[in-house]
Image (cartoon, rainbow, N blue to C red):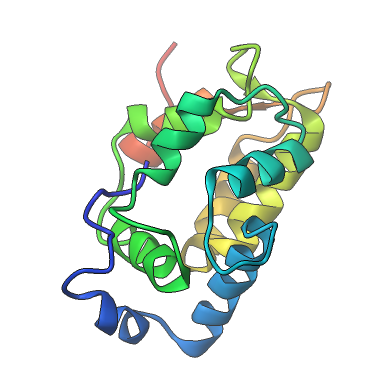
Length: 167
């Protein structure tokens, strides 16, 4: 998940210098997609709506509240950008990455269904521009199975350990 330090305190005014203009524009587009009611703040309702648009209809209030509380205050674009900037400073542990993927796996199967896998690939390659080639390489190394599902547990392991898990 995102760091609690991203609240708009010290350092947030310099967040725009961390990114190229094209990167800031891509984050702005992502922010606009998430800010469903277009009020300039990402709220619990915005998160619920955007997750519902991706097929995640049964997200609990507690989960949404926890996401919003990752920031120390309202999530405007500067705070949103700061949260991403802080995350780019280092890789998350495997359990954190797995938790993020589990949002796309409500049945707990360990894989992402075909339609969500396509969305995930698109999102990772278009919004995570710093890692586009690595994401494409992972998708090549771990293609969907015959049903079109993607084994995200193995992908998470490779992201955090750099090699495929021995079975």
